[in-house]
Every structure is written in structure tokens, then in C-alpha cells.
Length: 169
Length: 368
Image 1 (cartoon, chains in turn green, cyan):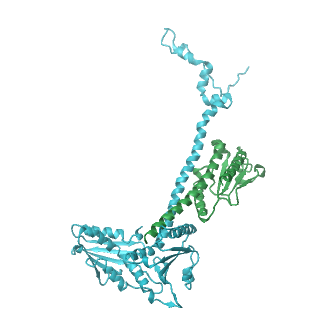
Image 2 (tube, each protein chain N blue to C red):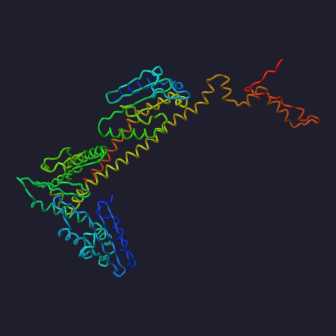
């Protein structure tokens, strides 16, 4: 199980290292404007082929690249209803505070749980390999946090149930 | 949470203050508590040691018949709280269902005062418990059709009905669960799963067995669809004789009355817990990103030393003044100028520094 996660993450890391070659490119449509081309999608010659890396049906990663920007969308595994609502709540919580992360997108791409938007300016301010490390670490942390939240909720429920039933004894 | 305690904390505090007051004071309090419960406390200067307590509480109704006023067994139970201290005043104060006259002078000792006042403060729990107890006792008189026991529907405010089904050797209490939000339903279902697991475990073997079902149980066959349509399923408790004998009856009745409130409170606390965890995790993730960013700035200086064009390296490491000083070898000259040995006749104005032009500025060429 752990080995398949490692393979999945290393595949994403290698793809990001190849895809994260961004440079400044002003908008061809409007002068004096500089827009992330992966979001606008107005000029097909500026877009690269998007890559989907699937671990299984429930977990996948979409990497879309353009000349000056890169978009990474993640679908996190959700085994049951409880993990489903925890993932939704947590990722929505993070997305609403996207300005704290700089590279996080406020709204995920349709069909995915969370999205990152990395532009050439981010690559100038931060190191490329550090950014990739952060994204891979983020994916691991999300899985770990959801599992811990689920475990904590079940533990709390068990404690409350025990105390409630003890009152009958 | 106040509704889980039998004694009202606010009422208890006010009664204790009145009991401990050195001299009689004129006091009037109106208390409103969870579940449409109202208290009115009044004391007069002319009547020392006497306090009038009026209560208005929603009655546990059977759904089919609306009870107006308290039945006689409830009145008898209230009188039994502390018959020397508590007297029922007829008629009750306007707008209230019951008025009690408390005589603090009849409280035996100071040590017992807190216990007696606590018992008085739990009068609402006594009223509700007595009603449910009496309903359970009178189940034999209820309609029995075709050898089956008809479920008794009890409506506990605010409009949360539950059913009591009397069966041979046991009572089954069924709680239909309803929530407004989908996330609440999921959290509640996880809690019910843990409740069933703990109930079936050895630690709580003597507790009433509990079950959860997404569909109405067979005991509720024939009830109206409106009451049986839920989104959180049905929780069943099987109460046996050992759970209602002696002093356990009060605990069992109070726990059953507050089960719905407990579930809702647990869901609310769980959501608050999840929110706190998310905030702390957000903080740690932002710090991790900032560490990556600050790590870049610390390595900048080292990278400038190793890589880069020679002129760029110089521009990074040296200021313009330092570059000029080095180029014209001025350091030694300035040292000589500032020497303490002064030679008469040699003044500063004779020693002029050469004029420097900026390396970045433009020099207009002179015309030949």
C-alpha cells in the first residue's frame, strides 16, 4: 500500500519537474496584460498536453501546463461518507484561505477536490524544487490529516457513547 | 450543558443567594431556559425566609391528547421533594402552571441546605420524569389490538417525538432522528455506530441494548408516514426491569428524555473540534510554505558567490563606491591625506581628489 503511494507521488514529482519550465509571456490578446495562459486557454499554441496521473478510480492528479503557468488539480481518496464530508470541509476551508498559500486556487477545477495555480512569478520568487516538494508534501499531509480527523471523531464518539451508557448502570 | 443537569444552575444560584442573605430583600427574577422553560422567583421584605417559585414548562404530551395542567401524580411527586420546605400555592401565578412557596427557615442544617436547594432546583426534571414514569406504569391500560402493544408516542419539546413500545418483559424506546444538514447526518451515524459497538461490548453489558436502523422498526408499523420519515434513521433502546428498579428509574427516564439533545450537542461539538483542527493544520501548512520561501532567500547569497557572471557577482557583492575605491586605489591615498603629520604650506585645497564620473552615466563626446 505504501509502495503504491510512493510510486504515485514520485510519478507526480517527475512530471512536475518536467512541466515546471515557465517563463514570462505577455498576453497576446490584450496589450500590457500578463495572464496565466493555462487559465485563459485562448491560444492553443501556448498550451502543452495535459497529463492525468491516476492511482485508482478515486485518486488522480491532473497537470495542465502552458508557457507561463501550470495548474495542478488533485482528487483525494474518500473511502466512505465520513471521509467524504471531512475532505470537502477541509479542502474548502483551505481554498477559502488561498491567499495564505499564494499558489492555491480559490476554486478547484471541476471534477477535482483542490487545485494549484503556479505562474512564472512564483517560480521566480520560490525555487522550483522547493515548490514541487511542497506540493508533494501537501498531498501526503492531506491524506494523513483526513485519516487523523476520522480517527479522532470515532474516538470522541466512542467516549461519549461510553459515558452515556454508563449512566444506566 | 444545562439541559443534561437535573438542577437548573441559575435557579440554584438565586435560591442559594436568597438563603444566605443576612436580611430579607425584595427580589424578583424571570428566568428563561432551554426548552421553553420559565421560572419566576419572588421574595418580599415583609415575608422573611419565604420565597415564591413559579414554573411554566412544556408538558410531555402523548400526541393524541393534550394535557392541560399537571396531573395529580405529578403534584404528589413535587410535594415529595421536601414536604417541610415546599408548599404548593393554589391557584398558581398567572401565566405559570405551578407556584411553590419555599420556607427556608424549615431547612434543618446548613450542610443540608445545598442538597435541599439542589433538589428544589430540579423541580422541572421531577415534573417531566414523573409524567414519563406514570405513562410507563399505565401502559397496561392502553389500547391493545390483536395481541400487540400499540406504541405510545411522546412529544418532548421542541417537537421531537419518540415512541415507547411495551413488550413482554421489556420496553422498547424508539427515537426517530432528523437533521437539517447532510454533514450532521453523517456525523450522527458515525456516533450511532460507536454507540451500538460500545453497547454490545463487555464494558457496558448491563446497559440497555441499543440498535440503529435506517428504516422504521417493525414495532412502529401502522404509525403515520409523517412521523416515520427521517433522514438519520431510528435508534432503539431496550429497557429491562433491572434498568428501572429503585433509584435507576429516575436516571433512566432522564437519560431517555435528553437523548435527542445529547446527539445534537455531540454533533455540534464535533463540528467545532473539526474546525479547530483545520485551523491549526492550516497554520502548519502555511509555515511549511514560508519555510520553503525563506530557505530560498538564505541561499541567495551563497549562490551569488558560486555562480553568475563576474561583473554581476561584483555588482551583488560590492557597492558602487567600493568598486570606485578599488579601481582608483584611493584607500592608501586617503590614509596619506589624513596623516597626523602636517606640513606647513600644504593645505587641503592643494590636494584635490580626482573627479570621478559615473560608470553608468553617458558622456557626451566633444566635437572635434
